[in-house]
Length: 169
Image 1 (cartoon, one colour):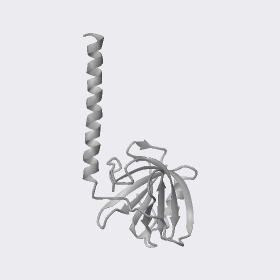
Image 2: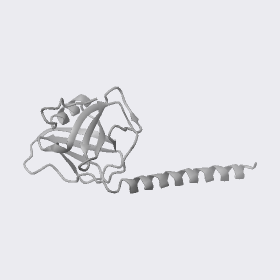
Image 3: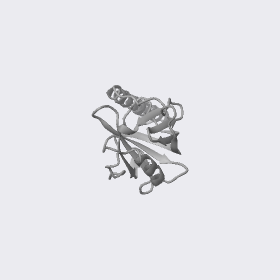
Image 4: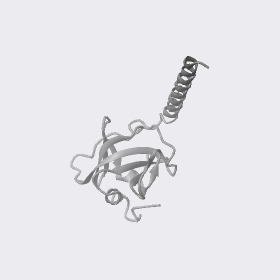
């Protein structure tokens, strides 16, 4: 086989792989098109109890940390800031409109080690489980940049009703 033939085969395989990746992502975005991040900001007058610079990692199906969802506004990894107030949490991701998670929609907060393509030290991620609609729970993962994962988990855990422990496994 000539060099030109080998080059043509390599380029063809590369184009095929990129086309398959594009096809898979388009299917995923169609599958998740019915969901959208709850865009908005903290209610007027809400007092911010804590603010954390974070790396947003992913939003996945609840309990399935390797199944990324292509939810509009939460489909891609990004730097951002999580602000916690008694009314809920505001998530400001670079290049996106602010997202507001009302406290009533947050169902659990825990620390995690793995999500999608991010593996960190034990309990280095924070997992926030929340209701994206009336009966579907999703998990969003954050990696704090200037604080410990425990500090972010504790701040977000304050959003949970008092009869919950604040963290789950």
